[in-house]
Figure 1 (cartoon, one colour):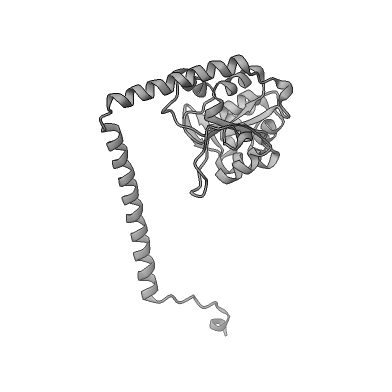
Figure 2 (tube, one colour):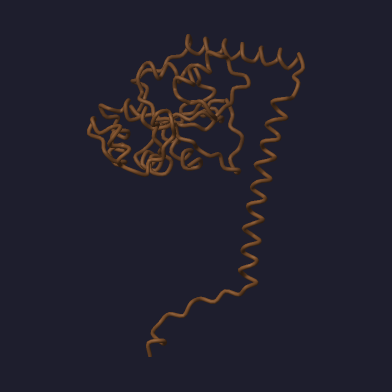
Length: 246
């Protein structure tokens, strides 16, 4: 009777187990091949000899970027009154091929060093001027509470001694932000969502979010979002864009 009460173990045929093992080995080998190919392509790109015409073209594009940057800062102005929210989420969408060093410096100040890096930013005069300066290379908008929570819980990492540390332990948060009364992930979400008094410290504590571009997403354009492109202020539409990249 005791034997009848015990659960019988699921039986898996040996051929099925072998097939699973072969599939796992093939997947690992395939992943290694893809990584090797990517690295080889990077090495080829770095070692490729540029023609003089390419240098001239790149120089002209960078100078054109600088001229357009100065024109934007002179002709346009973003003010706090134009913003519907004090909280912005900014995502870098373009590389640095035709980017002037001044633009690269501004992106560095915003901590957007790589494509599809994202950061939370407070809408003040200094930050709005930075956003305007790099407008074709970024997109931004007003994240809702759901987007803030999902970003922090799913992709949140801390910057500890210039190292990227996943937010899996509240002790890490308490050691760094406990003096501000912030001791857990929910406190971080609350401080960011409400642009609290320690927003700067918390946003600096967070490592820039690394988002992923899905294969189905079209190539991102420098044209302004309201004109059918991807750059600039998306307002509330940033939440749908975050969901695609999350």
